[in-house]
Length: 193
Image (cartoon, rainbow, N blue to C red):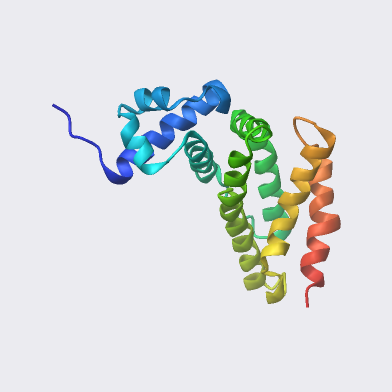
């Protein structure tokens, strides 16, 4: 007889199962029954942690985002920023991005899901990564300490998201990523006083 999983081990198994269901079927096809079966647990164990499907879907997406989060350290702010944008672009164009798109599509018809996405978005993880990049740039003397600010950190990703939203393209061309960094982000960082 196997050992019963509990705590973090069980949560990881459930999140991984939910992430697989999202990849396979999208949010619309993800059911608590299928997640429970894939995780080798029961629905009660899921509902104790996530009160409804939307909460589990968002948690599973965040789990995927945390796993996929890059942490570039190229030695320059420009290099780190380009690497972050390129990885985000690659991720959003991948099956992981398809998961996010299925959640966003479902959110159009489900105001509670949209509220949860706003509340629990992976933005905090992404913002921390950008703030780390800015901290390293300050330590190298490439940026003033005042550049380590949440709005400054969020700017490149907001511009990348805007490219996806306004152009409806599956992947943003590299020249646009370079433009975001060279024409907006670096001048913003360097101009902080």
